[in-house]
Image 1 (spheres, rainbow, N blue to C red):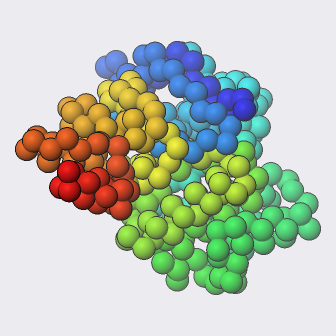
Image 2: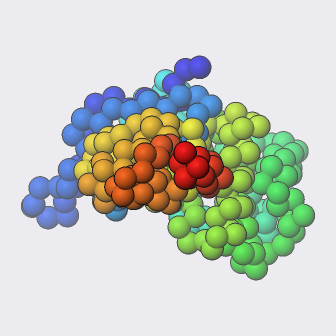
Length: 282
């Protein structure tokens, strides 16, 4: 498979409103996201993860270097719509993305702006709502739905535009545990069954553990990149930059300081329990 997104020597500085120099976020960022992958991007507040995500959709344009989406240079003004057809964005607060008073009308908003014909829009809306498990709510008022349901409607609105990639910027930050579960199950299924590339910006370690690849950012640079098992076993590194590993890994790490020799790649609670049982039985 090819690269869905390619970040090459990206530099970005937020412009200043006065004569002071702007705030530099990236100086030489390099990252590739393969087509069909499921990638989590982690980092403390201010590390640049949301700024990076906005470059994937051409909301922000590089100060230096290049970002390519499906081979399209995001800084080409005449290709911005092509970039946004390929990469859809879902943000933290679903209320900020809901624009209509009826669910199906809200989901239709994106395709309508793309100039899609009405019969095709009907098909896309129905299919998108079915994919996120919200078809039965198509005639409901969005403001009466739960947070998790609203976020699934926001995802359906992006799916209806048929992008090849969905970038979600902390989509579960304002949700309760049930809502978080609904959203994570939805995007996992879209990646697994539909082959949609998913980039998830999150600060929840358990969410990142469900992805196939984890990228950890610190101070505008990549501090770690690999499978969840590879990244989360680097507990000292995570602590150094202000992050924690999943609870199962933290437990094994603490026990190892007390003399145990437990593996640090058991992200699933059942696997962790089995490792503890084996260690105690030995």
